[in-house]
Length: 379
Picture 1 (cartoon, rainbow, N blue to C red):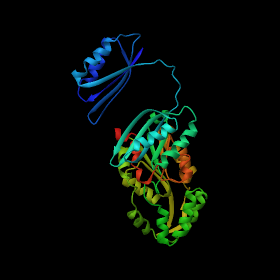
Picture 2 (cartoon, rainbow, N blue to C red):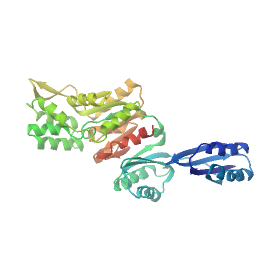
Picture 3 (cartoon, rainbow, N blue to C red):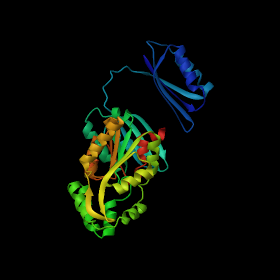
């Protein structure tokens, strides 16, 4: 026989000791337990079992309510045949507001999804809610509907298989333009060169996946021929990091992550960001410079989507890190392969083509939410 026991009240030392002591006295073995303190409020759920037991255990549990100033409820649990579950972790990130929990749980209820467990982390106005859910039936359809419904509420979400979620992530890879920095560097260079419109059109097509990245990059760089190298320094000095980026990188490094920047942008900027943020690795395309001016060409191999994926594989091998322990964050079609191949792929302020292959999405002002998603705020 199994019994479920709930204990709740004002937190104080000795509550668990008193309750577990009575169960032990009557020969009940605790087989599951979860306890937490929220704003000085103690709550504990436990399941205990014994072949048979009498009502004395429950009488003694009720008798100690006054002694330790808590409420204790219990119920005999029915023995049911255990159904195989397909567990996923759903993480929802957004601006805090009244009724937010109800909005999300209503969506889950309407989709027929059972919540196994739930927790919430608040950081200023940003809130992260984590649900353990069972998707035993219609898995792909439900994941698609979840993304649609929750995004319609103006919220970001990430859906991960529980087995992947449990694995510690050790390497995180970021794109640069419009991800770690709030700019597209090549567009900024184009403004100075007076070819902004032409370059932006090519950039947008490449981001949407309408033109091959390599070809688009060559054509854009060609338009920058003759630009003085001093312009690069000026643009870097004016570039702003994405909100929360510095704080996020600091938390990642303190938690033992290897942090890499793998960009289709330019090494002049990736190298400076590596130094400024203390990154472990930085990769980009090298602009050819002669006599203090851009030649309109790129030196060496171009980093496109396939090359990004190869670099990440090499980094993982070098660091002894498995695929499931890698997080990838990017915003455009050039990030598609690395997002798809990572253990956790995040589409940041991204186009539809990238969202479709990602495990989840983050909006432009929610980058710091990645810290909660990875459990850094719990450490």
